[in-house]
Length: 374
Image (cartoon, rainbow, N blue to C red; front, top):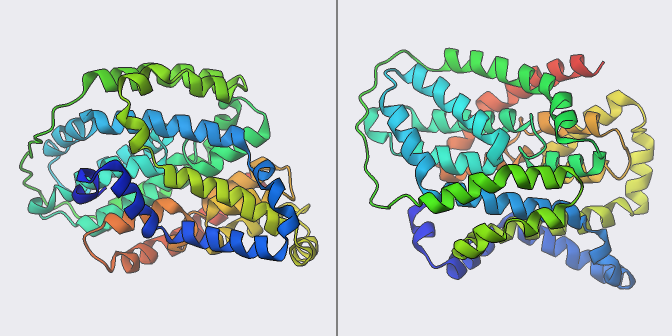
């Protein structure tokens, strides 16, 4: 997150985020159009929302915000980066670190940790834009593994009624075939040039209590959620939220609102006769059609809405999960993590570099993932 945004009061920062959140405004405009076309359906809007998923998402945002704002992860990462001697080894480290963080902190939070750290390396001569592009790819690849790695997995996990471990095992082959070529591409895309990194000291004091509470509550939260009690799991975070009340103001409420609107808009969209006719013509009962539809839809509306939409027509959560996670590559809109990373990049033309790597990677990833599903 930019320094100015983090320094602004929470309410002003939230309003500024809303003003520039084009996805949110698009969803609001779509909801307004649906409301004018079918005003009788308005009383049913709240019933269209999967509140269990919203509760789980809110809890995860609170925990990850606690870890992020404790100040320890950037400090630790900066010390590690200072000890890495070459551009290629730095790139491999940042790709692996982003992928690992994405499995437990979600893909967007992983980027909020790693990208600001990357920006502090400007004086080293490292190719910042290319590093950030690869961090976006790594966030998408790493987040595939766990139910909490990204929003689409979180939604499909709640929908599937399988355990945390079962979901992770089902996604493990896909995570492997995404990370392996990404690491190979990283080795080829960066040189062995030596870097001279100078440590950067932060004036902010780390908050040990916040870190310990966030980490200590993480496992209990996951266990209670895995037992199908997401509201109780959210209540279990009271010690953290009472000890550090500012976290509530710092939560990404815009993201939560976007999720609520996605449920409403996409379920209203799925009820339209023209959409039902199109989906029927595609015949999502056939595995190849469902898989290709997930990838294609992700390129148009991003992978979270694509997962929500396809779930209205198919209960094959594994195929949907493979398709929409692969669909996070390709065009920038395929995943919100892509947009987050590229918005923080210093080069406004970073999207050109992103597509130069992401579009070919989509073809490779799509083919490998399909071999796993056959």
